[in-house]
Image 1 (cartoon, helix red, strand yellow):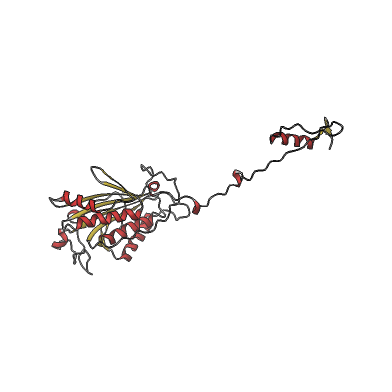
Image 2: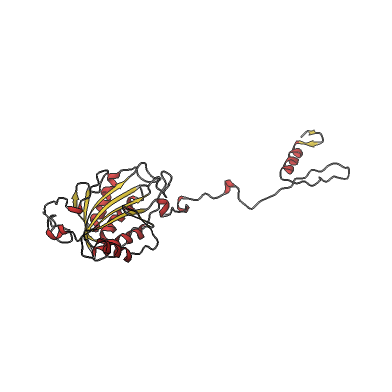
Length: 299
């Protein structure tokens, strides 16, 4: 290769490389005084940015319940002049470990893992129901609410599959009306296209298999059984839909010791709210009525 000013193109390139890596030592000379150009190479054991391993979806850190916007709101009503003692007594008996519980003038917010939320709601309603008075609980569950105070998930993010809630029987029977709202705007990565009725029907079949469904009314599905069984059905369906739909809410009105059951005016044949084949369809009665009309219901 032709020389240029006594330095070949190759040597000149090596000189530039040496300058780039910061070798500031004076270059050595041979016995004739000619500069001998050398190159210093530096290596690093740290991988470059391009070499850094990219975590797979399974390795990504799972969002916390707070980041998922997981929570519930509950309003407990007792039809008794002694309601303050009954409600405060139920609250005192119900553990809040692992939960954030905030009460405002309208309702109480409960935030934390789905399992602990379900345990709290079951224990609270059952404790109040053991008073023997007519107790009604209005419950809303929400998961993945975009723009929520603590929830800010990227659109389309895959949500972790939380284990289905498991609750111990309380020995307190209840009837309930339930509505489920899968609020699907777009499919999550790897899931099917949004179809809220598909998810609702699947949730109802899951509830039928659990044995808690007793019928349907306008906008709601009627449930009956132990308080824990009802909440296991509702929370389980909410969790199941939440694995493919980023934002899902559900509403539940629970009634314990309803005078309508004792009087038999709601068409049920047994005190636990179940009915025999051929029984007439009941109408809605007193506090067992769910007035939610702003979305699709589980029915």
